Length: 283
Image 1 (tube, one colour):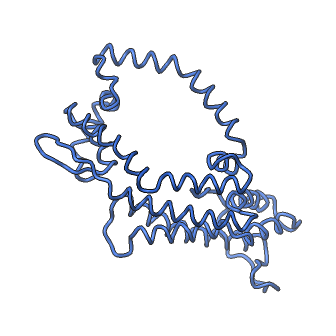
Image 2 (cartoon, one colour):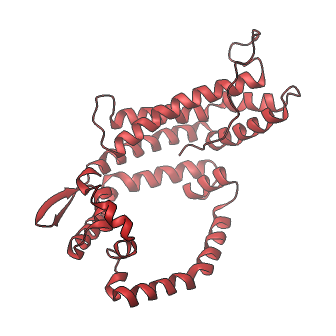
């Protein structure tokens, strides 16, 4: 996913003419240029992404358009020229302290996407194609559920919403069982291929796997260090979780701890009252 950075406000920049048409004539003009290009590419990606997730109608929205928008955004972030010019301005004494701070954020962001080996760039492009194919397949997933006497074919998102709001435990259980079938479906639809391709990419860059690659580049520390943090977090919250589970079982019965019941049981009265205004058919 794209790494978002907070940048300084855009200014009208410099009026001089640069010697190199591909380079900016001041640190601020470079910052403004990057801001503008990133904003345009990211907006195009976000429009396609949410149109896909919300099943928005329109000829301009498609999985192919989503794939193209994501590839354009990543190509911009992975462009070595962006990283080179960022570092050029970082080493330039003319940049102000504020500009230096913004440029440092640019450097970290671009470095997250940069590939020194051409083979890694090719693997990333192949992985993006796998991601797009899998997203297309997942959009077709429908789970058949019977609720209040009606048979409905629901998307995974609708199943989640139904589990949160449906008064019928039988319906919630059907939604949960339906969601379990999604895993097998995506595995048959290219998920394993995507995992293999991502791991090939990560190993080509010197990491143990794709998770290690993403954590190290984005967060700045290794997968092992992250697991140490998460293990400590789990240990410190384990007693609270067990106590909460015991209270729920005491109040609502042992069945409340079944995975299709917990979210529903934890929902507040206000949430349940609001649910009638957001029926599952409109998810």
